Length: 321
Image 1 (cartoon, rainbow, N blue to C red):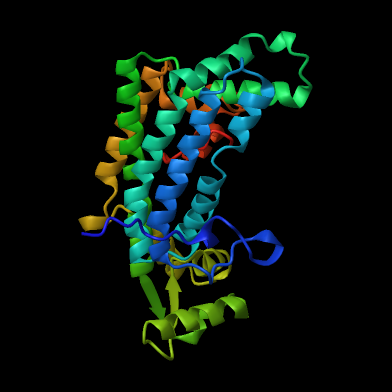
Image 2 (image 1 turned 90 degrees about the vertical axis):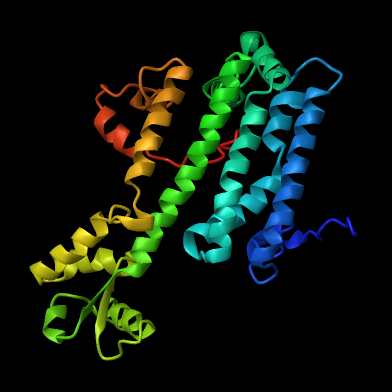
């Protein structure tokens, strides 16, 4: 039996497209699993090199090295999440369900690594003596806080539970997004009377006509839940009844019952986020989410808006971001 490892398509990590961007014609969906495996291993090797450095922690051998680690994983991830968000398909979605919890577990293993945090913590504790410029001091502060907010100070039981929570949240987040996307792609409102297009610019009419033709309804116009159609339709269409139908469909994505219903996912997500926040010493997930923002607290002057903007994805949160 052959034990040969799958070949790695270096186009995912060595970008040769225009302006140094990826060449999206140089790889296929099937190239991602092997590339992710390689990139994850490379990232851990970078971390091991930082931890195993024989000299005491410095900005150069610890903070800067951490900032520069994981380049391959950053590149593969950037391409993958771009495709998952803008040009997905069944293969990408299957991989998303698989890779999201895997990336979360990988991130937890790094952010909760006691040896790595000890080096960061050492720099943070003596930061006033290091003669740091304002930018480096701010980066050190943000990195240190990101470790603490990721569970670096928890005991082993707390770390294990937080890693499990993060992994589950990553899976739930991927499924939530895919359910919404499925509802978006399945719904269409066909318009047969051109008078019902009143108020719509030509570019919207053309997009709706193309969407209808894709669904084998030539001679009609389709209102779909793709943003290029639904947003201008809701903005410009003069037919109030049609706008209402389209808006109700838009607002009901992920809560239509059946396999794509997100109600149970939302309930589980809320419960796990609450547990996560309390593990980390916060009263609520809103308090945890806003603590590292301008609003600071849910009751601050920006609290209500901040809470709405705190949705985010519960996937792998890269430590350099």
